[in-house]
Image: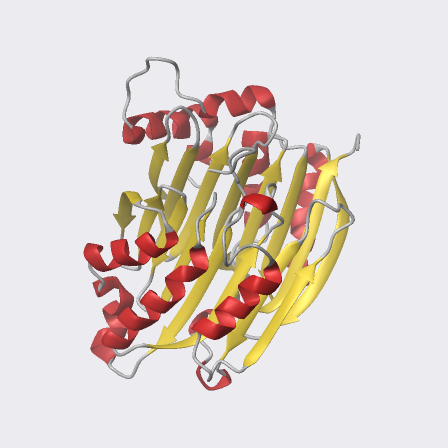
Length: 341
């Protein structure tokens, strides 16, 4: 817990692996048992509070955000003062036992609200990059680190990628995308829905389901199986799984440093209006004063849809930056604020 308040902005790590054993490729990282995952998360300083899975992947709600485990891909998002990058070395040790080798790494985050409260190695982006480079194998030699700016000094997007070009993973075959949305200055009335009533007495699972229904989060993707959790006295997390697609929401509703995030993946071959409709639903749940959207894909049109989706909701695109990254492709970072600003 930061001294000034809870740090909502997440750190996100995505690792891709390859292996020669076709049997192992079917399950891969999913064979890691709970004890092994707990060992990894102990290094990060967070715990598992709920889980759900299907035939494609497993999704875990953490005490600080989320963990997704696919056969050859793992994604960890953590907020607060967690030490996310300390998960890399134990994950590489476990993957080696399974006959898997790392072929790409991607690390992203926004600008911390309370940067002075972050512990090593998250004290600066430069320190984070050095730590990652010292943790990953030398064959990931195609690397890039960049801070993507916006016209708002409080918002920027930090990206580091590294890859072994000989083993580019399937998700980077030019049709999949990842959208990461960060929202601040949440509508105070809507934010109150993420507080548990005094003396309510419900556990995190039951209270989480109530918040999912009360806020309309259940309607963002009605097809998804939702695993949700409410924290005491406030805060909320959910993971949604829909075939091989995931979505996740995390909320820090306290006034003065309110924050919510949304993330999902998909294909550029989906319905043209799918991304726009999802973003509209998400923003209506929170009515934030400021929104940033980072889209990793090869489609400029996908990002244009984001702008078209948010402007009718009273948000105006204030800045737009583009970067090319090994193992990720194009990253487009947009910031939006209410027209009154």
